[in-house]
Length: 126
Image (cartoon, rainbow, N blue to C red; front, side, top):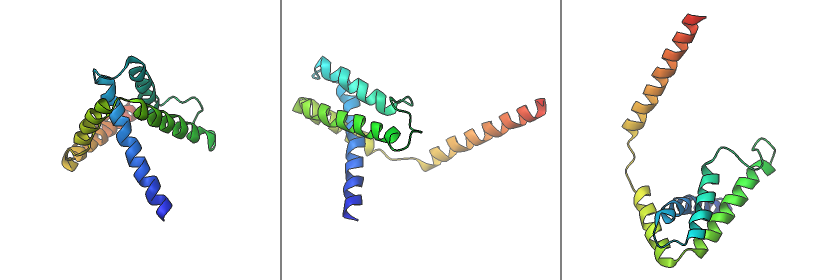
């Protein structure tokens, strides 16, 4: 049970650090080589395209875990302290925003409605 808690904590920290890297890219104090490395790691984490496809058992998912996690860890260690603090502060503000369940429900219902209309149009044409 303790292991699962550590994994959960580590996972949240990694997600927060990914957002921190996004803000570090925009910071003037970040060296160019770290901006480029941060951009590559953030892009790879958000990209649906992988070096090793996810459908390959175990290895397909491990490449994401290793590349993204290791990349985040190294870049966070190399960032100047002032940049890291500013970027983490912005990241924490973003994570502390309230979430609107009503807004999410409205967007979900719009997508369901549009999907239903598309289904009706396609059914009518065939």
